Image (cartoon, rainbow, N blue to C red; front, side, top):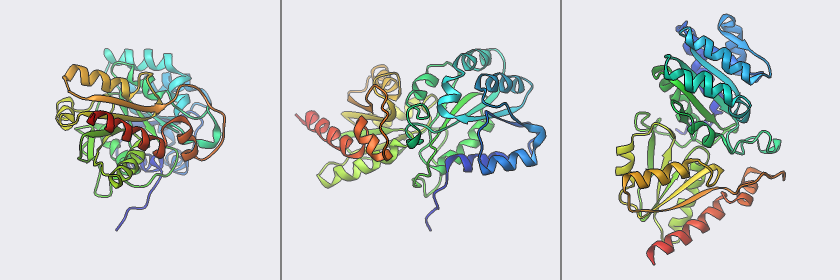
Length: 321
């Protein structure tokens, strides 16, 4: 029986709500952002819930103080606001302070990439991977469906340190029908092929699977790998998974060539001595104000299925030559 698709945030917040009933150390903070599940948390645990208002800088500092007192804190806001509006506070109160003081704080950013499609570039988020992976001591988690998102709660509870979870605002198709991937590894190989592997994160895993299906129809069997733990994946295992490929394609719903997973993979290939060329697929630099479906916007900025399929096919041909 297939699993009904759900919103990432609702599944994750429900895990928090359930855990708060028996774990008195879980505290929830919000920057004036709501959901039906959040209403249950506020109603059932009013002594461990605070809405700081539209004040993300205050959200981070209040959350840091609670974490220093021993609470496991979940801080919740829209993705571009919880990462960019309060970046100095994140750097000083979380990344820097966690170097010398133990804390468990988890930033939940909803609206990664173009998922707030009708809200325009102020609410869309193309920079968060770059910004958050630049901070030492931070873990950046980027699930592709609600199954993997829900299981990341276990990692948040069991692992100390600051973390950033980038959730899609839309209800996405279920990919992990058979159960969540191995959180200890930080990635999951969905398809094994040659000579190219598509390494995707978040929403772009759905695009990668569509592209692999399209390439198979024209005779190319490529690999597809979901990199959901961008900062703390198992490096030796990833090297082994990619060692047989002569080409690696990174796919992210963020700016291309500006410090995202493409930058991470360029460095990984160089440091690990992998004999592979790389193609980075990402949003062309610049902000756009056109409205349209997510698919239409993706094709316009160079990350839609048709654009990617054409780009990867040309890349494969260049490798053969």
